[in-house]
Length: 216
Image (cartoon, rainbow, N blue to C red; front, side, top):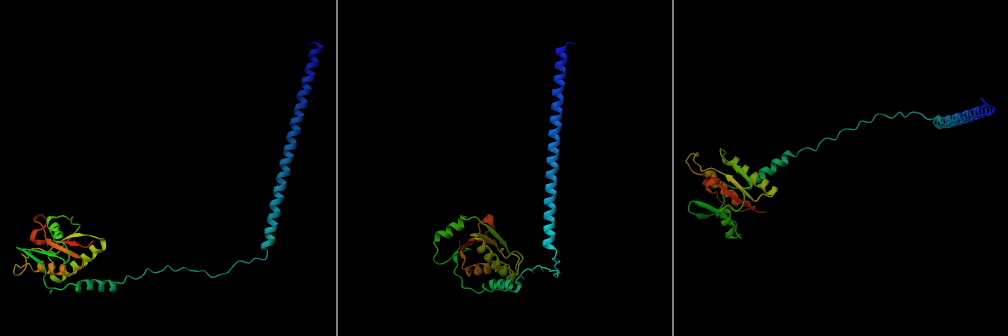
C-alpha cells in the first residue's frame, strides 16, 4: 500500500468516527429532552392533583334519602260512559215509527226528504260500492237494534258511504213474517245520516238485505 492510500484510509476512518460521535451526541440530546418533557408533564399532573385535593378536602358525601319514582297509573277507561253512549244509540231507534217508504211492488225504497230521486236510482243500480256489511241473522230484535245503532255510528265515524245490512227474509220466524226486515227499515229512517236505502240486488241478498247510503 502506497503512502497516499494509507493517508486516505486514515482520513476516512476519522470521518466515520466523527460522524458516529455526532450521532451519539444527537441521540443523547434527544433522550435528555424527552426525559425533561416527561418530568414536566409528571410535575404538572401532580400539581393538578394537589389542587383538586385541596379544593375537596372539606367536602362530605351527601346523605339524602333514596327517591322512588312511582309509575303513573293509566287513566281508567270510562266503562259506564261507554255503556251509556251505547244505550243512547239503541234508545234512539224506536220500533214504532211512521213509515215514509216508497212502495214499488214488493220492494220497499226510502229517500230522505230533499234528496234527488236520481240518488235512489243510482243506489238501486249499484252505483256506490258497498264498503261495510252487517249480518243480523239469528239475532232477536233488541240485539239487532243495538248492532244496527253501533254499526251506523262506526260507519259515520270512519266516513263510510255505502253499506249492506242483511236482515233475512223471515223464513225462520214463527209466522214466516219478515219482522226483523221491517224493523231494520224503520230504524234506518230514524237515523239522520241515512240518505236512502233500497232492497239489495239478487247477487247481494235480494229481499233479505238492504243497501244503505249514508251522508258523506
